[in-house]
Length: 303
Image (cartoon, rainbow, N blue to C red; front, side):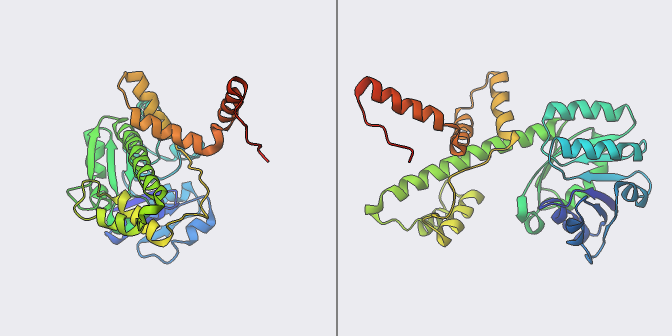
């Protein structure tokens, strides 16, 4: 078994390692030389100098996995890679692309005789040790070709990976997965904020989170992470209260509107992230001024 991997960031590099440890010969490429150097000397991993070299190293009907951010990085790489591929090759897109773009790309590649799989990947920096959850979209034949690799990447050969449906299904499933993630994270953060606000009750938040990890209905990996964080730094004084949002959260909310299916928790979690980025500041200033005008309430100076 051999595979090409393009993109050796936090997930791509560890996926290369997990596949290599499972017996796969991996040819890997990243435009960043430093990223390639991190895999130097790894057994069954050979870093190459370019996409042409990667394509040339793979024999027969090739399987290439791209682990790149959606948008320009993926588009630019595919523009360079596609002319190097031949009918029968399989391209697996592990970036979090918008599912409608994925469906269009799958149609385009099928017309070239290429197989295409959209792979939603979850597992983060812990995937090397614990495995990756894989949500796959594509034709049954494409999935059959990629299955041996999925069985190695997943937490166990029979669990943690799924052929979700036709092209677009994998990235759609990952989009909704990330929307759910937003809501779960927000609920945990708000709950611990309420606990922290009752200083008179003297909660040890790290120990409470650890207690909830055992037998509680809210036990989860996210709670595990909360327990670890709060044990180390309960006050979080050196952490800026700003949370980035990714495309998947926005797309999930847009899909809720398009389908007419309510998703208030996910929507409010996304709005909370926008607010944390300072995007509520102007509205709050105007609110303060309205209160001052109609009720004579004092307004705090920004200074």
